[in-house]
Image (cartoon, rainbow, N blue to C red):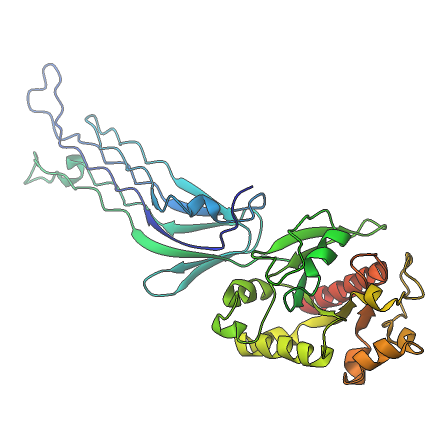
Length: 361
């Protein structure tokens, strides 16, 4: 499996235009034929193409220099040289393209098979046939081809997912992703097991699907690059819905939740404008099982499971500090046993639909 690479610097050079030709007609009985030098071919462009089959920029990790083909020189009898072939570089959907020198964003490839020209080929030079005049009937010069554009680029991948899992290290996000999708991220009982984003596709019984991203765990100071820092935060910008995953075995769930929100806000305040839900994970450690762990049919009037906490002192104590608004967004789950999972998935699906409809307006 290819290594996950989400930021690279590459050099691209478009093809140079071919030189125009210096030539004169040479035919029997035409001793002094006029100029007939053809034009040079245009140099090839360098394009980026968003390939939905790619999930990483790994192909650019070792090779960083890319050149399109030069145009061919013109020929006699006013024959134009062949144009250079374009060079098409395939990148994952979600790749942001920036000029490495100026920092200018040249394009954002968010749609499958979207293309972006990042370096244009040089025009071919004109042959001497273009320069004949009544007073200069035999020009012995032609134009050289124009050089193709060249530049250094920064390619930065920001994963596109419907739901982004946000949590501290070892909150159980990877276990949750493996439970709800076919993704198989590395899972272990120590912080920073997830060193790179993982994507999983969730399929509901009715046929709907959505994409969930398991992202490296946040710690305090992540917005400054502490821990995995920006390696995580970059990928959450494109998600439609956030799912804060809190581990019930932690000392202060509300403090953990505030840490997560603070880091998001310091990185980009707009992240807190996204729709979100809260998953209280590892409830099996408290011997708690939601009343409908095998929930299958979505209840459109259902808001959360918070009412189910009544009568379970340990859980009630864990969430006591949360405002009522946050409690209304809570779902109590066990990624290990599957308890409460389906109810959470339908709630996420409803949030995704709400977000999509709002953005379409």
